[in-house]
Length: 119
Image 1 (cartoon, helix red, strand yellow):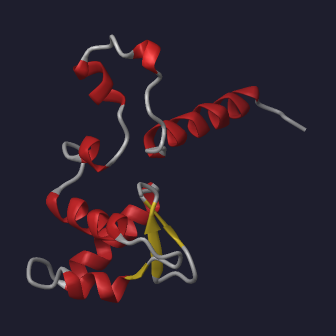
Image 2: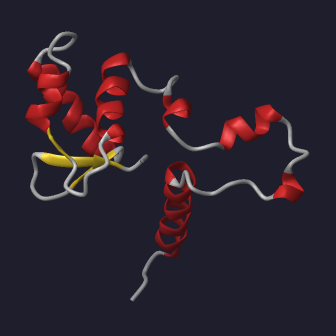
């Protein structure tokens, strides 16, 4: 039984937001081709839009996960090893946890394997 209909509305709004921000396979319809480039870029999904909202380590960790094309994703230890020249393992793991919490990554086979929602 629904007690607060604002929760239903919030759920649908959240679903639409996640879809818009993570669906990279949708091309704009040709009848909308007269939109300005700035407006199109503002709403285009992918890592490019996140450049202003993520710090350098978050962008680096997310890019490594986004480049992975396997079904099981990557193990956090492998990611830490790949980025060991620039960042400590502890900072990569902290960033990994933050990206999971914020919804940029999701776990696959266990809590140490993840994939990016932006493939």
